[in-house]
View: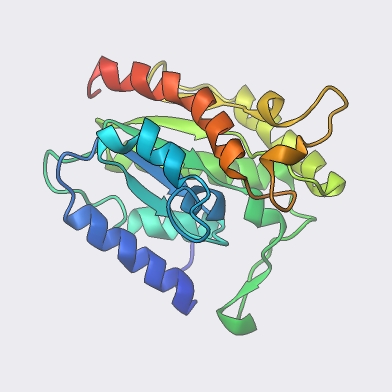
Length: 231
């Protein structure tokens, strides 16, 4: 975890989330992640219609930050992104992390170098994702957490790494109904193991249909966990 976020863009998104969390009222659901999460309602806004139809009733906060990596995510969750008003923690948090660890090697215009990239061991990425989930449980002990596996990508070498990361995530022990792991791979690939092209814009990011498919997969679990009430 870095001592400070130097990248101006990342810092701006970090502050955006801090402000939304500080002002939160009756927030039952949050989504935390990178550009795939952010795209629900910002950037391209590919998931906006699905978000409005499926999740708006939970007064959700979109905590996505394009290009984010698990070290910066750990900084975010430990420096304000989870500082909800007393009694105002969400019922459920959905986490989607890790894909950028295999891509991002520098930030702040190259001034900050990250020991990441395609050669990063999947175990390190899985540990980083688990650490983010653990931070949510520590900071928000009444919040239930859904950890999503890294979604399929077109680049075969990267996808092999992501699949191994997901295998490791699936092998961890999760306290029942406190942390739930969901691997959505089967929803996004065809019978030949290839990406369903209609669900992706560029081999990584999702089309509106892709967000609909994701919502189909996670909405039942969100509703089940919210119905259980706070931990």
